[in-house]
Image (cartoon, rainbow, N blue to C red):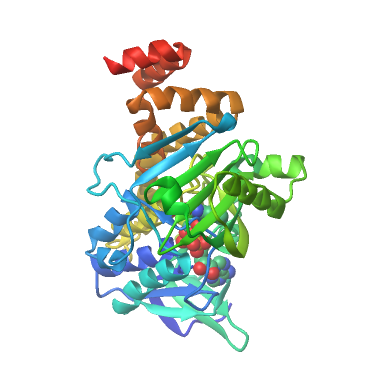
Length: 421
Ligand SMILES: Cc1cc2nc3c(=O)[nH]c(=O)nc-3n(C[C@H](O)[C@H](O)[C@H](O)COP(=O)(O)OP(=O)(O)OC[C@H]3O[C@@H](n4cnc5c(N)ncnc54)[C@H](O)[C@@H]3O)c2cc1C
């Protein structure tokens, strides 16, 4: 590869929440850094997603006083879970540890990602939209040369660190020779937008609806209220099951729409159906090449295997990477800083991911889902814990496993009495 035109301190591929928040974090920690952010799309761009962001994202935005991008958005205040045989529970969103806000917002990604990217642009990050990553190469002096292209131009930039934030099909990850997640550690999901004039009336308030093991066996569906009568709906299943049972993602969505209608929800103007893959954090990649290149967000398989949430972990990984490397960019220890970021991320989320992977196994069994919802409908602690796994960094301790197993084994009537006391 030839010499480059410009030398960056930090170059990031992918301007989703992970990449943009990494750019913001580097600039906030050291405004003199030259940071470049490259995306193959031109923003605002759509992304297949449930669009739900919770206390973690709010706190990540608050870190640098950026929560104003959520102003005027309606707040979601509760969750409604349905399981097989129509067992349903509605619950407020419990207070979560170490976070100020027990609120969820549902903001279409075409808006949310653009707002986060604009925060990076305001900090004078150089943004290249409509350019795809081609390849990187290491120079003799350990600098990286990165090639990007659009229809008309091929550009080459030098950088001290290269960050792959290029999502579930990351090409940076591919060039690092890091394998994709196996089908067991991935899901496929489809989202669509609808209008529903009576959703809020049926659920009595702005409630996130989850349906586990009903429209899709071993999978889950959602209906999330956004502004006005706009709803984001969707359904996902583990990729291994999707392939084994030769399922059709559009048919699954149709089945879920029928379920919604059976619950009395009026479904109008189904549109913008879009499916994509979710690489779960139950299988995190290890980078073995000793170059100053690393991965964040979906490119690094950070999605919660129970809920499918990934925006929070992606944004937090961008911050943790910047925190661990922003002052080492000119040091021979930069690679140690990258390893410290990987360790810090694992330390913070390992137990949480493990608990969510365990919960995923429970929720893949219709029998266990029914039992869990029965226990949860009689026991506030259990439902709070399930909702915390969905929205926070909660994890199961040994004591909690014993407590939950005991509750699983108690007959429902007895559990009701025990929970009352
Ligand atoms: C159906 C579905 C529902 C979901 N629901 C939720 C939810 O409700 N809440 C939640 O928190 N998470 C949800 N997720 C997960 C969430 O969408 C991801 O975890 C999140 O988008 C990860 O952010 P990211 O920045 O890592 O990647 P992305 O948001 O995917 O951004 C990657 C960026 O890289 C760019 N890019 C890709 N390749 C290249 C290239 N070669 N060159 C240059 N640029 C490139 C893309 O254009 C894109 O802008 C859902 C996912 C799916 C599929």
